[in-house]
Amino acid sequence: MTYYPDLSPYSYDESSREMLNVGWLSPEHDYTRGVVDERVVEALKILCAAYENQMRGIHHCEFCDADRPFVFGGTTGDTKVLLGSAEIRVEGADGTCYAAPDLVLHYITGHHYCPPEEFCQAAVRAAGLGTVSELTLAE
Ligand SMILES: [Zn+2]
Image (cartoon, rainbow, N blue to C red; front, side, top):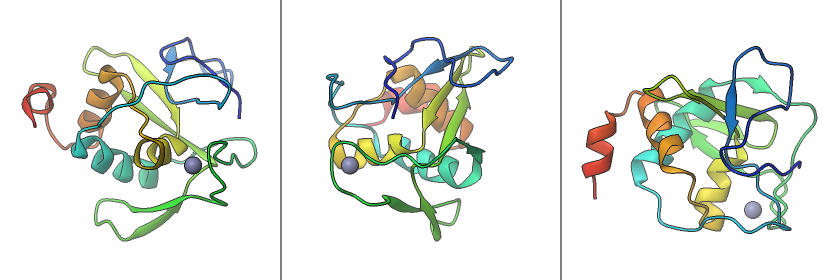
């Protein structure tokens, strides 16, 4: 998969909207590791089932041999979602849009990836799980 630094301008397709890249990881580049709020994971599970921005082709995780990583997502948590062929797009409270491969969820749960804080907040907001201040205070 193509590598883009976090928060670089998105240019994967000719979208009219300005977006920032998040989670386009590659083994050749280091990435931020850390603990991600559980609500961010829950939000991405909802979003990866709801957002169907299909990408060209199938992308595999380059950090492990997972054939097709999948999660049980959606609002009820029982929708099986195969990761690696779609994007998650979220809008932050300030109107900034972020585009991430849905593999970002696998990177977080499987490889300790810690996305930028503003993306985490946008994802929780987009999934309707809370406000920015609630997330910031969550422990
Ligand atoms: Zn992996």
